[in-house]
Image 1 (tube, each protein chain N blue to C red):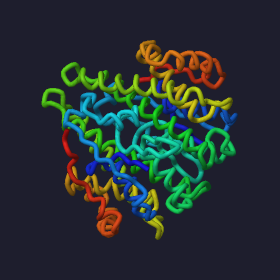
Image 2 (cartoon, helix red, strand yellow):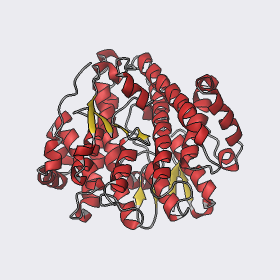
Image 3 (spheres, rainbow over the protein chains, first blue to last red):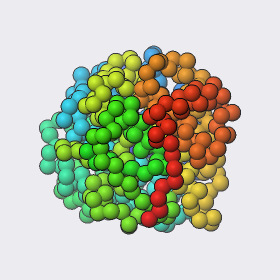
Length: 212
Length: 212
């Protein structure tokens, strides 16, 4: 299987942590992609032909298997969990699945806000909206706080897709925007400091994406 | 169950079409939400307290049941399909699920681009990026074309989640941005003209969101 990645993307990291937790890292060819900083506002025209052919969305991650091409992390995680994880990271159905998806939806909303804020920061001074940056930051803080107050106490022993997505949202916020998020969710920050020591998290720590 | 909606949102429409196709419309209280046009760049402070309490992401749709709150359409559709549809609109697992999710990911990427373009158009002239609008339009056209060339011929008899998401992406593009998308995917447009006559699509045709 071919997985298109960058070292900065939290959506990629989420998939890579799932792969590490399932112990299937050697089944993939990891294809590094490069992005000019202009990706925030412009169609990127320097994508490799194989990547461009694989995904009309033109975002990472994208997974190409012999039988299917999946172009977002939701679909990829669902696929890997079922085909290679016997539903260990996300139950196949029932109340436990819905509780996990409740957390995934909040953590994913947080990640989307973090990425949109990043794209905003890459705009020219003239087109950058301070209001939009504040709106995204507000959403990030609300999402961290909601995970802490409504879900953290029911996190179980398995580092499942709900916890993985939450941990990646904490990690990207810290890496890109600093420790400010910790004051919105101090108990979540304590949990994150512990879970960040797992090998799957250490191996996938973010780094800047190579520019094309 | 309580479902927070607006008549304009394609993410809401996707859920509402699923509900119509499953024949469970009478199980929901539909709560209309209002949004000022400033939502494109500013945190909305006029949300009703119950909606704000339900979702830290502060986006629609959001579904509140007796046991779980789901704050994005991916989680909601997955839940409804399993709990009320016996997996009729999306197979529980296996190759048919992954093929459907491949389509869902492309159509969802298209919908995201359409909404981000809408938010851009709501910005002040000064902060609006013509490049960003063009980038989103490019993505929309690539996604429509990819569905047509790679997936349309394998659409089956069931109006399933892959087809529903595709139809909603066609419908929002047409409603918000006009018929320009049709030249990128003329066969898909023919399919859409036919599927748009289904009662589930007619009942959920978009209309402008009430402003707060």
